[in-house]
Image 1 (cartoon, helix red, strand yellow):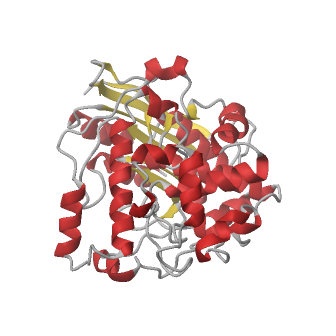
Image 2: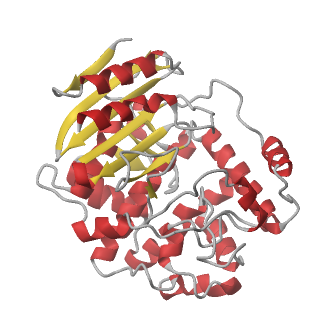
Length: 392
């Protein structure tokens, strides 16, 4: 396997693990690691299979839910300026949100997937592409009663996480998450990172592809039934529709329309070097610029969901430790251990991952175009993480 880029002395094992994993991958990928504000690993390998060209240094790709980490960073910047209070009711900033019994829902509930709005009600009639239209999606969320009491349970909000936080950000600043990412993060740091890709950058995208057939909504419903989940409850119907909408949007993200859209939960487009640099700037200075204050990072990586488990009989699906969320970030747990306790970041559908570990001064990002389909454990292409632990 030909691997481009470089590693600093002491990170040769990271390069070997990356190369071995990419050799078994039909597509391509990039890996970038910063240590104490300096780039120590910058690698790329494989193919842009759809366009039949190398996956190179200049390639960019959809980073899926790794986008959520950037959206959270925008919110944290606004909190530092006193414009958003994590503990405040959402309705303080967005009065219409109080409908449906959500008056006591807090900003931190939105950031920790515990607000009880993992999707929309089937009765809303919304289709997947309607979630991109603010005048359709937001009224449905405003009117909706949560499917559990905010703060009582935790279940992943694949699309609504971004829509809800974007609505708050727009009301506070008059700008979208996408605009603030460009002005306050990508611009100052010189990142190739967009939510809403400019047309002139479209030629650089390596479209994602799935080597094996994806799981259908019918198969997911059958799986839930097999675990003893009643799929006729409102909770289950909302969750199943959310998964269906997410799958449809992921499939359509190879279109120009979806790349250009603003979906702050999942259609960020970047290279690994840019995502890693963003995380590095969260935990220290990079090129003279620091993105978040140390005390903000501590709040971001403080566990908020505690012992929360999925609501209702969806808790039957909790086979291991529950997902641990801080403010907008996943915290270390199996299978997303990152660099262990203290790590914070976010993975993305198909095997993307990005995180930081303040104690070691490390930030890392892996971006790829192949969509892995396993749910049994860490993506095998993350083998470099074990080697990184040895190097730091």
